[in-house]
Image (cartoon, rainbow, N blue to C red):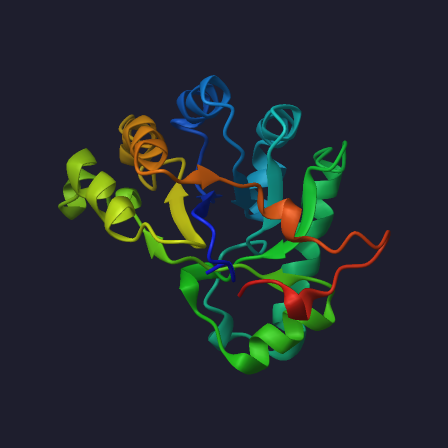
Length: 218
């Protein structure tokens, strides 16, 4: 959650598999002049550097989602550090540093967090950005999800400071991306309910070259 009483929310996407649905998502965001933050794995950035550049060129923020999307509790401290740093290097190599695209934001794989691991990430210069709700569109129809269910989950969580998590890509490489289909309905409903979508980068400290990760939402 973002600490605020204003009727604002943030929209975020994770990407670890492929870029299915991305063009649709970027198109809907552009038509509504809506900012988003995309949390990408380093492996995704290595496979799809042109996609990373496309997201950055569209003006959206890019966050770190680890390199290979492992369960962090199964790693050593050194292993967790390598995952974070390797992903950062991959994003930079893909050209994500253009403009203000690359952020000091990190999102744990599988939403698996602990106070100690958040401290580790903070020590590497990243703020942990989790979410209020996941639409669960990533499960696909084979996992029992529909566009209506994804929209409902997002709107049920709508409150000041909510952070929505969605996904692009499909785990099996299929053509259907529920979150891409749900996005326009979600954005239109956000506006209709008197909310506006903010860019998470507005939460960064204005002091050049620093980021007070302890003051950012986790």
